[in-house]
Length: 281
Image 1 (cartoon, rainbow, N blue to C red):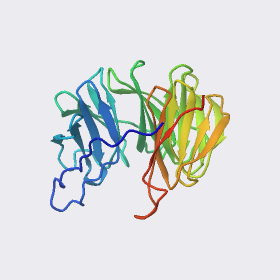
Image 2 (image 1 turned 180 degrees about the vertical axis):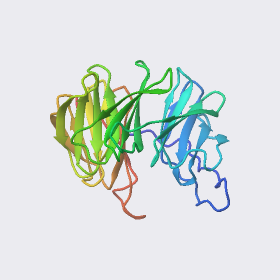
Image 3 (image 1 turned 90 degrees about the horizontal axis):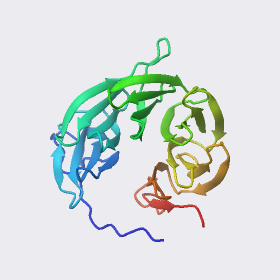
């Protein structure tokens, strides 16, 4: 089926500081259906913004410097929290989605001697009350308790280099970690920490999403220009062309997967696309 037409679009507001780059770029995005808002990270300005879903009007633009190099954002509607990763630091910033105020910063220490945990992608398990985050420098996976906002565990991810993307399968209790420099997807058993599968997927494996209906993991390979589809058992089901610089994948929980890629240049016909992927009937 064709994707729906773009019904509404809103350029981010002018830079909150005169010296900031224009326009205010949006890198991460999350939807809060409980509050009827959209959260966006403004990475170049080290901050976040909140928009109204109905007309994409700006609800609140947080000041520059609120979250250093803000990257991923995920929303836990039931708990009323938004979690934002501050890339190149060890911090996850926690916001109240009703009051639109920052409540805490969760700092993650590496379990390695002398190691530094540098946060990247986030994956939410709202039913289990957990947040998963990977470190690109120490190649570890941290598990955060959402009720206490405390770090519950930090696990090594053997075989990962520059760990960047993370996803979770609640049915099997498995975590999926995509890594840019090792070009692979590591599948871990969270209870034991054991590596179950180490799957070569393609150059620059940047992000991963788990689609729970068809029970498949989708990996965006930025260098290879592909999206690789992998089963929880580590079997490659498909390898799909995805244009220039595949950047992100998102599962909607209804059997659909959306892949976003980035253009090589302004006139790149294979870039800046949103691709709908679903399993053939």
